[in-house]
Amino acid sequence: MALDPSLEQILHHSLQAGNEESPAIEPSLAYRLQMAIVKAAENLEANGLPAVLLVANSLRAVLARFLKASMPHLYVFIVLRSA
Image (tube, rainbow, N blue to C red; front, side, top):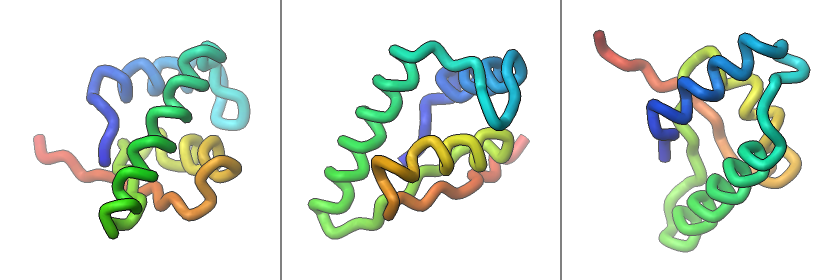
């Protein structure tokens, strides 16, 4: 699964507004993001597929830490986009 590019942009800007340890993400957005990813990962696993999230390099570490508590078995990888 992957994030919508517009959501990635919002998260990237939030990271720039805060810092990697404490990004400036609106709490309701963080909650909705977490719930949507958990639901999508559960659907993947229910179909016998691994829970994998592909994100931009700038977001990987932050999202991996953010999601680890609720989805310890979720793999967060960098997606390479061609120009």
